[in-house]
Each structure stands twice: as C-alpha cells, then as structure tokens.
Amino acid sequence: MSDMTLAPRRRPLWRLFIMPVLLLIAAAAWSVFWFYAASQAEVTADAWRAREAKSGRVYDCAKRSVAGFPFRLEVRCDGASVSLQSQTAEQAATQAAITAKLGEILVVAQVYDPKLLIAEFTAPATISERGQPPSMVVNWSKARSSVAGLPAVPQRISLVFDDASIDRINGPVQAPLARAKHIELHGRFVEGSPVDHPVIETVLQIAAGSVQGLHPLLAEPFDAEVRTMLSGLKDFSPKPWPVRFREIQAAGGHVEIVQSRVQQGDLIAVAAGPLGLGADGRLDGELQMTVAGIEKVIPALGIEKMLDEGVPQATLDRVAPGVKTQDVNNLLGALDRAIPGLGKVVKQNANVGVAAGINALGKETVLEGKKARAFPLRFVDGAVFLGPLKVGQIPPLF
Image (cartoon, rainbow, N blue to C red; front, side, top):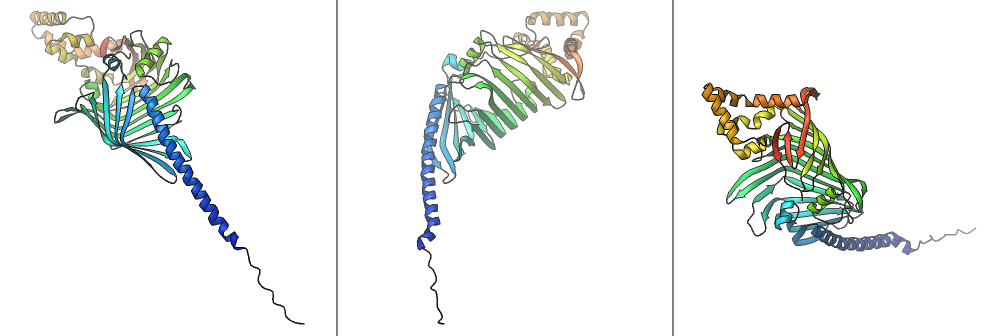
C-alpha cells in the first residue's frame, strides 16, 4: 500500500482583511460623525447666542475653535464678553448696559451625550458700563458650570465658584467688595414645562461669604443656604428679567422661600415664607424667622452710634420711619438738662431697649439646641422690617 500525502488546505486570504477593513470603515464613519457633530455644535452655539440676545444677554468671542476629536467636543472661546441689557428695573429705565470680559471659556460635551455641557471659565473678569473703563474686577481659583437639556431650553443649570472675590476699581486702586470661599447656584424646572407655566427651583449656597460697604452685619464672614420656588411664569421664552417679574406680578405668582439658613459665628437664623410683588414691582410678604444669638445683631444696627452723632434723618428713616431727627435730639438734650449725663445713659442703653422690644414681639423657642426667638420678618413696599426696625430697602424689580 503506497503512502498518500495530503496537501494542507489553504484559507482564503480575504478573511484576514475583514477585521482591519471593518475597523477602517468604523473609524471613517466615526470621523464623519464627529466632524458633523462639531459643525452642529457651532450651529447650536449660534442658536443659543441668538436666543440669549433676545433676553438682553449678548455673548461674543474674539476667536472660537472646536477640538476634542475623537470622543469629545471642546468649544473654546478666547476673548469672551457678555453684555447685559435690561436685566434690572434700573437698566430697563436708563437703557444702560453692563459688559463683562474674561480671557477664555471652554465648553465640553461628550459626543454620545451632546445635551450635557460642562464649561470652565478663566479668571479674571472685568465689569464696566457702556463706554466706561472697568469699575469692578472678579477673580476666582476655579469656576465651572453645567447645563443639561440643550439645544432646547435648559432643564437644569449649575454654577460653582471657588475662592471668588469682587473688587471695586477706582483708578489704580482696588477696594474689596465681596468675598466667598465657595459659591454654588443650582436651578431646575420642577413643574410644568418651559412653554407652559413652569415652576423653577433654585438653591444658593455660600461658604465664608462677606460683603463690604453695605451693612455691618454683612462684613463678617457668614455661611448661607437658600432654597426658593418661583411660580407665576407664563413660559420661559426669551425675555429680560424685569419683563418676567411683571408677568409674575400680573399672574399673582410669588417667590416661596422654602428653606433658608444663615450662620455667622454664634448667630444662626432660619426663615421661610412667600414673597410677592406689588403693582410697582416692590417686594411684599412676610417670612417666619427664628434667630439664635439675636443679641449679637442689635449692636451691628448702629443705634448707639446714631444717637451719639445726632441721628441723620436719612439713617433714622432707615431704622425708625416716621421719627424726626429734631424730636430725638430735643429729647436727649432735655434729659441732659434735667439730669446731667442722663442723655448719655439713654444712648448707651439704646441697644438693650431695642433688643427687649424685638424679644417682646416674638416668642421664645429653641434652634439647633440653642435659645432663640421666633418673629416675622416683614417686607412692605420693598422695605425690610425686623420687628419695628427698618433694616433695609430693596429696589423695585420692574
């Protein structure tokens, strides 16, 4: 029997090229998709800018570029600027515009989730009025935002700043205006839809914040968290905020302070309640407030200093509307004439009397394990009253 040798069976060579060819096709298809998505990102950005411009917020870039191939879309805006028009009642009346300029904005989106945008902002930013040199400079160590829901109306927006500061500019001199170790602002739709009576929830968190030059109470570092619910909007179509506030007032809407907490050293204050708008755009309403350590607040109101300096009428109007400067000065002078030194004693004990008056208005309670007082914080035509004292004035919102 003769031996038979079988030749090895050859495999078709074309099978070896199937996988590389498929990878090349997939890579080419992905590249086409990425470049299409990049072009759409620019179209979406232009549409968003046009929408914001209708709301009085004009965004511009000196130079714009798109990168991030193959899995991300990165839109870089160099020489960014934002011009704000008619965003407050004062701006709407005077047609003034405020412009903020900063070095760079980087917006990032994943190709597979283009409706979620993450942005980073490069400090510093300068703020100026139209045709004027910068009046403020804003700095931060890190600033970022996230927007979900684009290219339609955003469903959720978040802003975060670390080590934020605002300084006034007066020629070559910069003076501190505000500081905060950390700031977060979140907003989202909770009811309705962007085109049908939306209800918007916002949460503001501030860590180690302070404001100079407005009120002594704000000059010392404080922590704050405020959650609000805004109702009364007809829709969320592009329009300036004064127009929205007028719409809210006409619809009987309001801002509900769902929860708020402020802590400054041993002072802790919480408040909740609704605030509405009058026909003139001023806040009206009442918050139920509970304060632990209220005795720390009274000296900061400056009542003893006011009495000692003769009580300017403008200041007296702020804390005790209806009382005339001359009446107070005459009373203190009469006391000194009757019993020398009595007027000075009254001045030095004015804070004690005010504290007693506020305590009489509220009721004793406990807040976070500390003795506290609960009383209303009233808003009347934009004026803010703590018990009988007028402690602030809020300008009209439209």
